[in-house]
Length: 554
Image 1: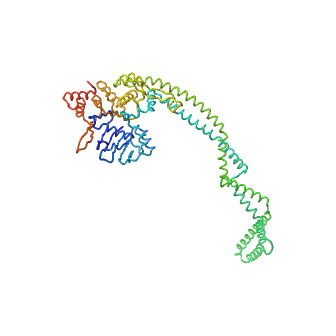
Image 2: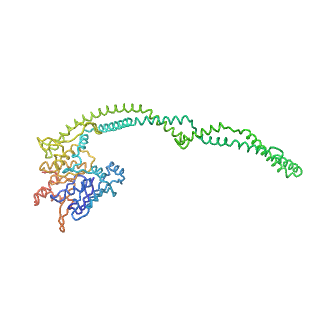
């Protein structure tokens, strides 16, 4: 709900701060005091077109700020969060107009776009007045009103879900058609690549092993020559290292029989001899096994060359080539199964069309039945609201193609007088008639997700018992939603939970507007003025007190 409104430098308003309460708030005051300017300011908060003509004469900037309590509106909080704004229980919207054309919008202190404001504001507040209605002048809202009256929200949601799924299936089928030629080319390419990699029979770590084997084969001559030479130097004859070491070992053993302290040394030398002997024999055996094998070397070179070509073509390593093959094999499976996918999609599409037709038929039937009942209900309300003989026709027009909402569009046609052909509301209904029609709708369809309603000109052209009825109906709506109403009728004003008097003052040669919240005594005088005019009599005061006490015309 709207809790506070601040207006600065808008038209004749200098500075104005208004605190609103729950229930029904009426704004009263003489013509020209500035009541419509306040509504225009609220319109700016709703995202209405901003004009520099609204800026007070002599000022460079106009500002409107509105504070809303959104503690009970989680969808608004979610919308703000998704847009990157703070989402507490209070929402502050500020709009500034500049003569330089630099108009700005702020939401909770951060700059925002007009697009976001236009998305959020109608969820917070709605104005019903001279072509200000955000609901009745937009035919796309008429279907929502009819469906709400018919109570077919679940059926409509089911249709919408089916419609969206059918659109998705159609898009997938269209994609298959458009990609058919590309799919064939892709299938051929991937099949060749997969076969080529499969034929190569790659193994992880294979390249490293081949490189090592190649290096050994390429060095076979050197390995054989060096290992043979090493064996000869160790074990080849008396002059070899082992022959000399044997003689040294025998000498030390001989000495150790004389000096026992050399026995450990003799053992160490003997052990060294044995180790070198093993090494020599190993080198001899190694040298005897080394053979030059040009055929094996060529085979390894050929294999490495194949791996090199595959790496250049597909991926830097054998492991990555194998991973690539796994990926293209998965894609090949999808491509080869596209016909199965196509058949499945076509089967699903046909089933969805049949179900959509069935659900859409139920929607249409429910809407036709509800339209007849809604017509009578709205006309009955309209006739009570000084629109005797008015005709309201919720018409259904079949669409060439279904939409997410069904097989038809709905528009309310209106004829204010008997004998006139009903026409679209935006072409024929006056501001007062629009306000009263919306008031009638609120009696028939009380539930709404918009917490604050503003009625302007709702009392235009009515009086007497009708005025009393309008007041009671506004009071009834205000039991569920916050209602702000500009009125010149005392019968409406006395139904208010809060009465604000708008008055125009002249100070230092400048005209300005102020708003006063009236207590009971002040309300009595204001209602008396509305009853009697400029001269307030004791009789008018007494009548006003009676009206306020009963809330009805005696």
